[in-house]
Length: 324
Image (tube, rainbow, N blue to C red; front, side, top):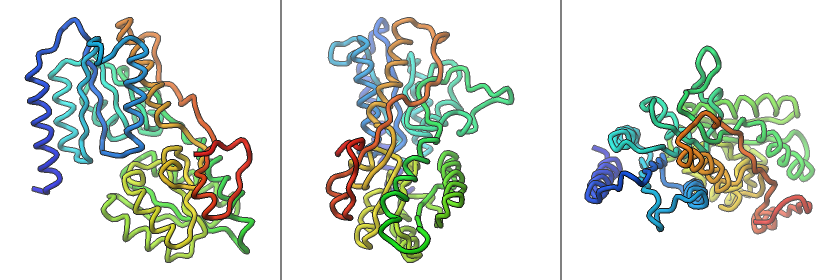
């Protein structure tokens, strides 16, 4: 058995045992929260989700809610066990962070409300029925990917004036992630329309990031675009260090990655994304009903730039960009 997978399973069993040792008060609601993998940026969504619950009157510290948090550590068999465990615990609702968690929960659970975040809308994920309806127990907040056009335009605005000839942008996408493939196809069309060369390579596991990013840099790209992709999130430090070593600026559509060193983005604040989903979950806990709930689109987007990264590449941003 793979060591990392074995460790994840051991931690999962320990976590289950520790939860079982504390009998829950049935009068207090229990909320499950699933993350697909460990990531500093993605973790902000869980914080936002729990803060929204707290504001809605559901606080672990005050004993008004039980929260069962689990992280699959990137292992899908562990994810399956987490979903089964939350079912057996008969939680009142489940929060899911990132696409993999959402898909795993929706595929197995039909009778518990699921509040998703850090993922695309159901039509992009292939979750709609032939009548174009999302699963009846799926709520929360998704993204439609239209916003990445604006982020991509930032590259053209900042990088193109500094070079001669056709702009060449590199990106990595995960072929197994529907939202990543959709983003790639969208950007490919946009690049063609904008007379930009888009050089894209597939990356299906973060373990291959070093090899793939070096292959991409050998193709003489002028900038790298970090698209909304869980594998890119997990491998971001490797991507960034290699691009910095090659003097290639990294742009993105994710505010959290700008905090981690990308130059600039127009995108969603991960904390606010989780908070928005948590507000829906709190409303459900308060009313016990879902008839007024729906899958929402992200409300809070902003333009941001990383001061140190901008200075490194000599970029100056206007006042409508927030400094990070």
